[in-house]
Length: 249
Image (cartoon, rainbow, N blue to C red; front, side, top):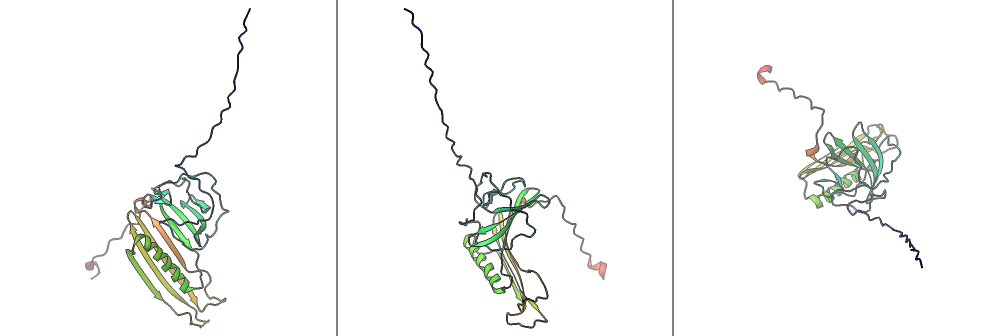
């Protein structure tokens, strides 16, 4: 009797589960609801001449979140073409001025934020607040609020400068409108980073729909920058020598 070998073929279906790399974080385009220890609740004007928002849909790897190595996960010295991990909407990427502009909300405040690049890469982030341009006191209150929040994180400012001048809100000569002026600036030295908060408040009095000078004259900015990456290929203008007193007399 002959035996015919029988070949059994078994098909195995393999399934492979994709495991997310814990070292990468996908950043979604949603409003900021949590403020990290190196950012604050702010307020500012939206950018002028902004293009249609460009959405960032690709997952972006986030670096360390400590301020000494970068701002909110974007490392100091990163090149211009590096993707920025941000939950803001990308408004404009300006290769000529080497800057990327975003808009969105931090906590309760609307902000505009600009990442700036030098020859050595990313060196500065500048945050602008939305202000009530007709309310002089609220502009000062916004400065003090942010200054207090920064001081709770970084301690008292290293430098403080405050100047006020002009007229009170009761001034009412519509034919001779004047500015109420406040210039406030506080600076923190968070080695190796500098943190600078600056208010330039200019409000016309009396407040009227028939302003002699048109436009908005106030701004409030918060800047984080790293002096170690503050390099430019454009040389600074040469300082002229100071003449000797004997050349004058």
